[in-house]
Image (cartoon, rainbow, N blue to C red; front, side, top):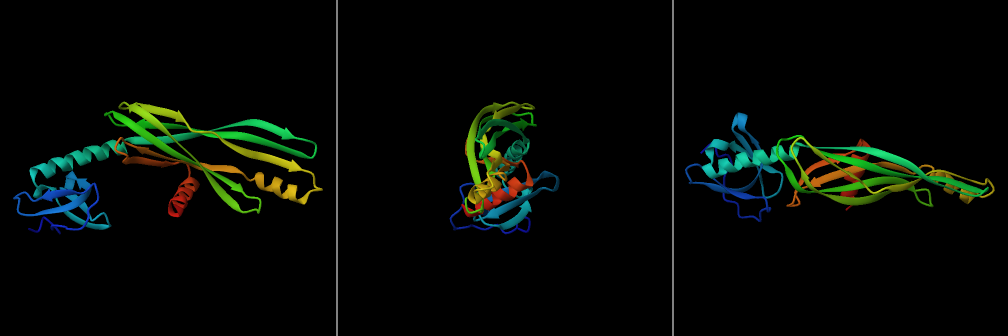
Length: 232
């Protein structure tokens, strides 16, 4: 049956999101994960064995139960894409100290995060997990990135409304000066002046711990997040 491209019974261990799909006449079945449904072209795309092996088929070539599943998949996909995350950085100087030899200034930086529901359905029991990336230099002068993580529970976001929360605050030294008579102190003062918040990553999950959307406040935050994920 040409419209059931690459349908076969798979015996390998399958991902938890896999499902058994059956042809409209019940003669063939396969185990796979649905990753795309395009009603305009009657096209579905599967992923096999949790890998990057894909196949394409016609949605109308499957059973009525499968076609109902395709529609529900599309509905759930639309829900996740209706979430839009934005952020705004807040800064506040909070400490100035030192003596005639050593002086410094510090500030607190945090983010106000808004999770907007652009759809007309309600989201319930969401969790927003976030990472703030802070660039610093260690005592040897090497650049390091510290990660400040947290999470917020969002009980509900009704259609066309949003939910806001504040992240943890991060302390950053923005100015540091010391006597020229101490080379080590000079080096330290130079390094801490370069402390800065690179950006923010936010990931929103549903009650089943499935990620619905991911947000990066800057391209630097995105590249840093990708690097940290690779190191993990």
